[in-house]
Amino acid sequence: MCRSIKQLRKADAPTTDAEIRAAALQFVRKISGYRTPSRSNQVVFEQAVAAITASTQQLLTQLQANESPKLKKVSSVNPSIIEPIASSQ
Image (cartoon, rainbow, N blue to C red; front, side, top):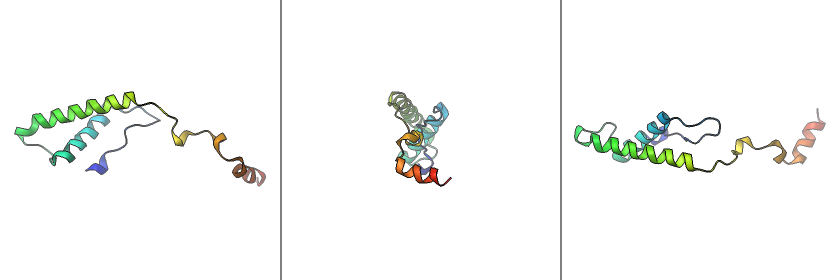
């Protein structure tokens, strides 16, 4: 089940409420061992999903945004690597 939990913090697009809730649901399923809780556990199960959803939303809004490694500027590349490529063209 945990394999289906995806990284929610993305540089290219904001995370949706549906994505956050889906990840929280998967987490609660994994921790509880229930895919679908019994009626007697339904309220507690949903409360846990809501609490984890809220915590995740708070975490994602409070994290400091750093430059993504994938978006680094080309100027940070070692010039000795670029020069042979440029001269061969």
